[in-house]
Structures are given as structure tokens and as C-alpha cells.
Length: 112
View 1 (cartoon, rainbow, N blue to C red):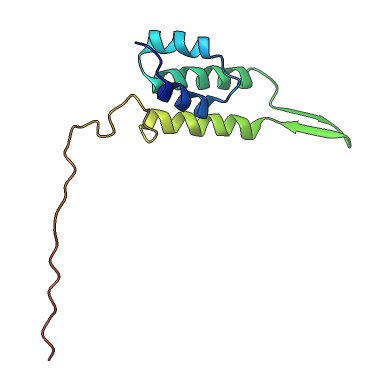
View 2 (view 1 turned 135 degrees about the vertical axis):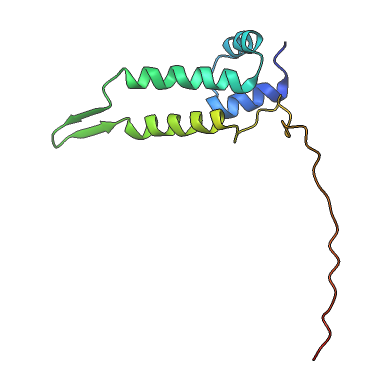
């Protein structure tokens, strides 16, 4: 399965412009969906952040914390896993349910 322009654009929007297109193409061929590729990359990045010191500080000079970055990765992963973010290569209606369109007629009530 080849990486299309729309799938590539979606992945770049989720993973950033510094992501290697060759790496994305190889992962997409192996995994088959954009959601799976995004999850794999984000989980790797999260694991890398967790393996490092989360907060570094030099008293009175500088404090650096990666705690918010970790939380942001966790939120994005949760959205992808829950299905709230639909990839461009996935059907927008996974249950194959037809959208219901109906008509409602409004009728004025008689005055008293």
C-alpha cells in the first residue's frame, strides 16, 4: 500500500514537518493505516521522553520541564486510540451505517 499525498499531509500535520517521509512510507507499507503509523511514532516519542529526566533546574537560573510535552503526547495518543481522530484512509462511518436524514414539519398551535 503506497503513501498517498492526503495521507502524507495528514501524518505530517500530526507528527510535524521534521518527520522523515521515507520513514513514514516504510511504516505505512508495514502497518497499513495512517492511524497505526501515527500511533507508533507518537508512542516512540513518548517512550523517549519518559526515558529522560522530566525536569531539570539550576536554582535561580533556569528550569526546564518536559511534563507538559508528555501530557500532550498522551492526549494525542488517547484521541487516536479512541477513534476520535479519523485518518484520511479510514471510512468516516466505520459501522457502515447510513446517515439519517429526516424532515420535521412544524405546525402552529391554535391560539386560545
